[in-house]
Amino acid sequence: MNLKVNIAGVEFKNPIITASGTFGFGKEYSQFYPLSALGGICTKGLTLNPKLGNPPPRIAETRSGIINSVGLQNPGIDHYLAEDDVRLAKEDVVVIANVAGACLEDYIAMGEKINESKAQMVELNISCPNVKAGGMAFGILPESVERVTRAVKDVCKKPVITKLSPNVSCIADNARAAEAGGADGISLINTLSAMAINYKTRRPILYNNHGGLSGACVKPVALKMVWDCFNAVKIPIIGMGGVQSYTDVLEFMICGARAVQVGTYNFTEPMGAYNIVKDLEEYVKAQDMDVNDLVGSLIVNG
Ligand SMILES: Cc1cc2nc3c(=O)[nH]c(=O)nc-3n(C[C@H](O)[C@H](O)[C@H](O)COP(=O)(O)O)c2cc1C
Image (cartoon, helix red, strand yellow):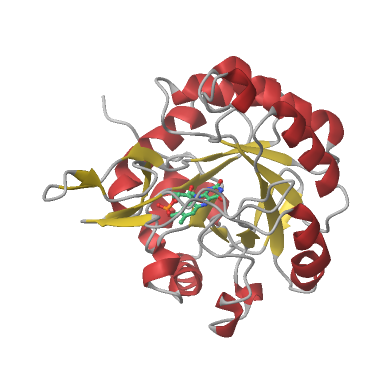
């Protein structure tokens, strides 16, 4: 049996990674279980300068997920490098630094900063508005996905994973654009644009009016998008969106993901990612299988 996966030359002891923005920098969760049980950890989205994020309310619960408008609250890359980078490097787990920016120059500066980090990979959150292009997110148009990916690739010595937004008309086009820009892999999906309202006050629940939907409800959308991207590119795919069990992980891998991130589930079940690793291990052992054999093994009808 084998649980190890390799993405862009980086070996993960198992295919389970905690998703950006749902696991902080691992400190709180390390009180629940050893981080070394995981394949990888993806940091909260880091920016050049510290960010306070949006005013509250920043989370609205839905029937089977949440809508968040945290607004990239983070201590900034320099604080991360001084405080968390060294601590995380001592853990036997792959660290992926998730980075964001408000303009192309920010992403380039972040790509350079990540060279100073001990993180093994960088994940580009391109679902942020480009303030120099009328506020349209970097991840919407394929040309912009390619441009931002190439700009970071030009300066960053670590493997670059471009994280795709689902709020587009054809995600496969954006996967191809990331590949053309030199991405070493893609990850998907980020949150789906969404809104929650209070009918009594006739106001949105979130201070920011709208936010990003995640959790169990997005899984079917994410599976389809992973499958679409698997058929569009050759670079490895990290799948995510609503993962809550080892069978969800199997489904994502069958659709073409080489590894899977666990996000919102960490909030309702702090042991969630750990339990998924243990359950997956048990299943793979019982089947005496190699998880890599699952990747893209979907048998389509007709
Ligand atoms: C509260 C919250 C904060 C998030 N922050 C980030 C972030 O900083 N950078 C990023 O790329 N994705 C961020 N995400 C998106 C998740 O990493 C993930 O792509 C998405 O939630 C789908 O997975 P899930 O359904 O398992 O949560 C955030 C999600 C949530 C719920």
